[in-house]
Image (cartoon, rainbow, N blue to C red; front, top):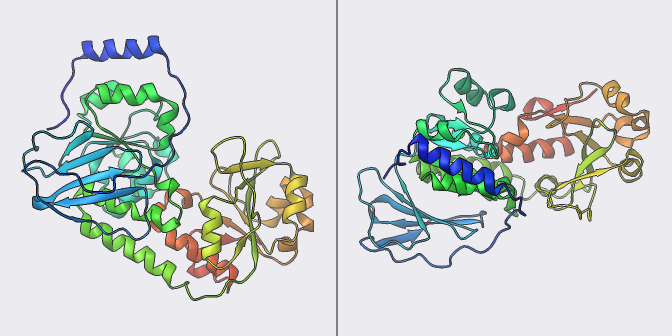
Length: 386
C-alpha cells in the first residue's frame, strides 16, 4: 500500500507538536546483531537467505513469489512486497511494509546515491537531502538540474509538505538522523517509512559496497546489484596475494584554522590502505571526544608523526584540492621538511571519492598503485601533486 495522503491540517498539527516538543539530540545508534533466523510469515513460504560475503549489518531473507525481508542491524525489519502481490496478514508489529515500486524515494544518506546511480535507478529517487551543488555524482547533478530530483531539505530540516505532495514512499537516512529523533518520528507519523543504513559501520570496505544488494532489492535490480558488487570484489581480490610493502601513507587535510585533520586508526580509509598493501601512518589513534572518525591536531603534532611518511595523500573531500607542491607549502612551509615532499610522493584525491561508495574497489586499487608503480593513468580518484 502506497503512502497515504495527509491533509495540510494534519501536517500543520504534527509540525506544531514537533516545534513544541523541540528536537532532542541523541547519540548515534551503534550496531546490534540482526535477527538470527528468518521469521515465519503467514501465507509466505521461506526459501533462503541471500548470500552476503562481507556485509554484517543486514540480512536479506527470500520468500516465494519474490517477497523479501530486509533485517537491519538496528532491529528494524522491512517486508518488500511485489507490486502485484498482496500484503500478508498478521505481520509482526515491528515489520514495516514496503510495497513496490519504491520510485519516490527521499534520499538523505549521501553515500547511497552512487549505489542507485550504479544500478541505473536514479529515476526512483525523487527527493534529495543534498542540493545540486553538493553532489559530485554527475548523473545526480543532471537529474537535479532538470528537476527529475528535487531538493526537499536537509535530513534534519525536511520539507514535509513536499514529501506529502510528491507522495514519498520511502526515506533513506544515515545514522545522522538519530541526532534529530523528532524529525524521524515526524516522517513516520506522516506514513512514510524510514530506513536507516549502517554501511559506514561495516568492518570491511567491501561490506560497504555490498549494501548495493539491499538497494538492488528496493529497486528491483538484484541481478545488477550482484554484478556491480562482484566487479568491485574482483578488483580487491586481485591484490590478495600481493605482499605488504611496509610503506606508510599519511592521509590528511589542513582546515581553515590551520589544524591538520586526519582519520583515526579504525576508519575505513586506514583499512583500505592496509588492503592495498601499505600502512596508515597512525596505528593507535582514536577520537576519544566523539564517535566521528576525524581527528584534529596541530601542525606540529602532525609534523612529528608524519614527517617520515613515505607518501602524503591530501584529502580534498572538504578542502579544495591542491594542484602543486606550492599549494601545500602555502598552508605551511613545514611541509618542505617531509620525506614524501622531498621524494615527490605527494598525491591528492578528488571530491568524487567519498560519494563513490559503489567504487571502493577502485579506491583501494588507487592506493595500491600509489604504493607500487605510481601509474597515474590507471587511477580513478587520485592525482599526483608536482
